[in-house]
Length: 234
Image (cartoon, rainbow, N blue to C red; front, top):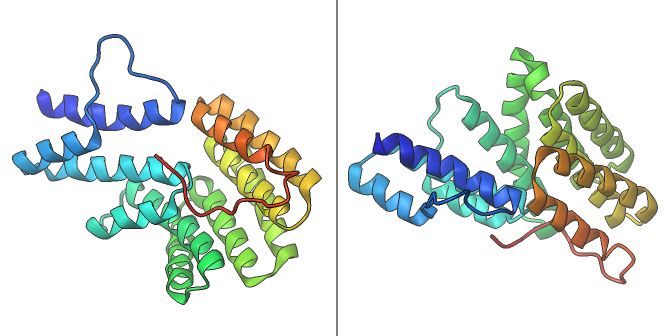
């Protein structure tokens, strides 16, 4: 019974974080550090994996991509065909392609290209579930390669696919990354419009922390220097 409670706390912690809220009522949600200590003490591998994934989930959504990989190094992929592993691959793909663009280190490109290759295999099994992720990774890879027209087409295709398949969070993410792409490439008006779409979709998803983060970025759009997507705080 306690194990179920700790697993629920692990998932609930990520929900609270993204919602920008606090625990409901008198429920005390333990930190991931505390939950990891419990998992290690009880040798509960499933709890440890859930903690890892949910903590990485938080870092991904705030754009702290180095933290994503710091966590990932500590937890090797299981090799099992589970949805969480596919989502992990997608997160690592987006993170690595962004880091490749800003650090110019070839290892990040390699990780991103490998992630795209794995997601494309999953897309063949279910384009409904994984098509929007593939298109967004393709957009980021085109951006890395300097193929701006192809990147823009892929961003739009990802948004359209996510909207058609009712994945609100992926509509929001693709709109945000497309908006940032536009802003970073001197298309501020178009970028601001896409960022507003992202804000609206994040609101619908209930991710009020993301709403605040994107609004904060929008406030810099007309500033002389535009911050790059690379790090964040959690």
